[in-house]
Structure formats: structure tokens, C-alpha cells
Length: 138
Image 1: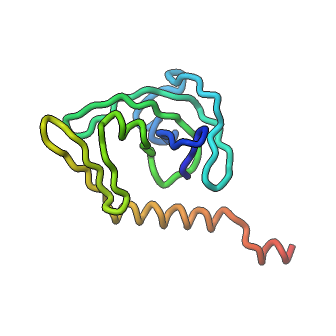
Image 2 (image 1 turned 45 degrees about the vertical axis):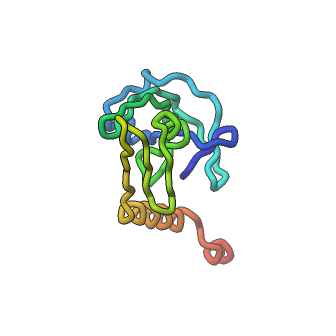
């Protein structure tokens, strides 16, 4: 589930990861704006938290909106993280390049993991939606 807020992508952390990091719900700042998935579902955030994200030796602060919703991902990073890092993403090549210490560093995506996430999301969607034939026979 990718979420949008006021027409732009946002950094999202799912509640399972948030709890797995031993962070407390009372540490969240209020975040009142509901988010909408590309499936059209409205998700009410638990709140927002500013965390440090380390990429190799570079560290940037990122605001994450914490949501209690299913996802095969643990977090989704978007434009503000890329801008803070000065990164240039390539979805085609599944790479992110960014300047650091006078050189260009590269983060390479994992095609196998991306495929597993996509298959998991499709399988969950098929299992959660009633089939039209089942609805017609009721």
C-alpha cells in the first residue's frame, strides 16, 4: 500500500517496524491528515516521528508517518529522504546514486526482494477481496 498526502508521496513506516524498533506510541507527534492508498482506502495515521536514517556513512533526518495497515514492506521512503541525501533515483535500474565525500555512492535495489513483496501484496489482495462468483451465488 503506497500512501499519498495532499498529492505527494510521504515517508511511511508501518506499525510492525515501529514497534520492532522499540519505539513508543507516546513518542509520536500528532498527524491529523488522513492518507489515501492508491486503492482508494483511507488510512488514519498513528502519528509522525523524526528519525535519523543512515545510508553508508551519511545520516539524514527524515519525518515518518506511522500507520497501522498491512504492507509487505516495512517502510517507504520518498522525495524528502532523496532530497535530503541529494540523491538521484532510477526505478528502471533499481539504484539510487548520491554524492558523499567527493564521490558518488550507489544503493542497489534487490530484484528478488522486490518481486517477493509484489507477489505477497497480490496474494493478500486476492485473499481479502471476495470473488464476484461467490457474491453472485449469495
